[in-house]
Image (cartoon, rainbow, N blue to C red; front, side):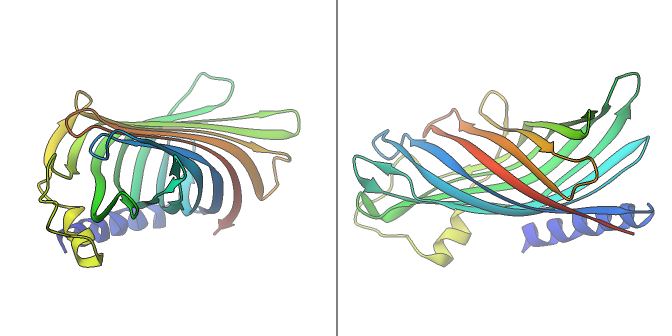
Length: 251
């Protein structure tokens, strides 16, 4: 409930700030690609496989600032030695407030970002009674660079966490006690949250978008995402995706 209240408050702040501007850009996007998950608590096996994500993003930009709000959900089925896993990704809120830096050929915005991310994985054939998760509520930096070349438009976006609250499953759990299920998942994702910085974890994303025509509503791009937790039990996830994005300007 506390997480929901915080999300609702941040969303209301975002909408209130956006309402003071003349236009909001709404973007819907799909991405599909390849992900790799290494969970130290699961024998250290590396799972590789396809994943698909969907999300929406609202942004308002002018000569002084850019405000963005984004959410995203995704699911993947990675394999290791022909053993499948179910990998779920949820980002219910991602807000960035960036300021414009002048003097460049294109347009550059840099500013703080706040986001919630949930990574949740189960291994039915290996650990049928246990779930594995990595949660981070992170404060970080977001940079957005946009420029035109001939008739095309390009955007490069980079963000990284600096510090926040994290949650991980314990190193050891009773093998005779099964704790998998929806109610357990909701509780586990917020369990024993502790403060962490770059020494303990990092969550970063790089996106490169290409718009064939500057006035086109469609963009195509590439996304690289990395998430890592460096304390025991260690966790690393890397994904490479191709994106299709549809934009609409609301006035």
